[in-house]
Image 1: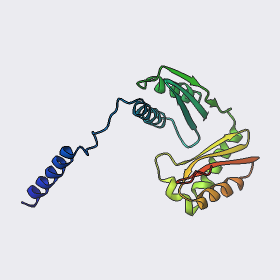
Image 2 (image 1 turned 30 degrees about the vertical axis):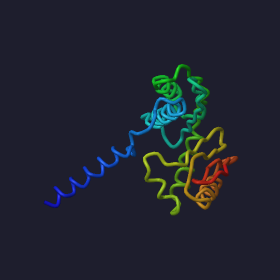
Image 3 (image 1 turned 60 degrees about the vertical axis):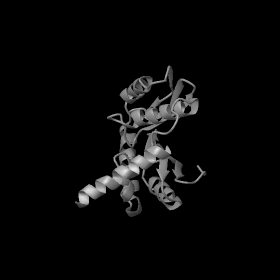
Image 4 (image 1 turned 30 degrees about the horizontal axis):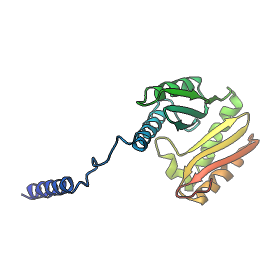
Amino acid sequence: MFRTKRLAFAATLVAAGIASGTTAFAYDNHTPASKEARMVRQIRHELIMQPFYGVFDDLSFRVEGNTVTLFGAVVRPSMKNSSEQVVKDVEGVDRVINQIEVLPTSPQDDRIRMAVFRAIYGHPAMTRYAIQAIPPVHIIVKNGNVKLVGMVGTEQDRTIANIQARAVPGTFQVDNQIQVEGSSKK
């Protein structure tokens, strides 16, 4: 009986939404702005869903009409190629300019990557980020230089990540480009 009333109430809400035109489907997806927004969402989704995309890779892109320019740095050369391929397959993309850098192979850089990862995500204030499928702070290491990119919830988290990365032996320089959610500051 309770289940029947609940279903009837839900059906009434859906019908009311349809009648008033306030459903999730009541938008015009034929305007150029909505097509571009849909394309941007799809590109972002395809890039982060690649099987080998991880915390040591940084991918970004710019859309200009039907042309997509890829930026960033990756550890595996195959990530550069697969990123270009998945973006080419997105509806509306005619051309892809691939400017992704493949980071040089270096045992020293690999050691620094792991040490910075443990230092940042091992800190008690940062463990909540570590449990995400792809942690939000990406660690890019090239020739001993560390670049931190991504987004965190507070300025304190941004500072903690910076301090933890600088404390790792063997790092020459740390470029902290982490952004804080809701802040226009980079």
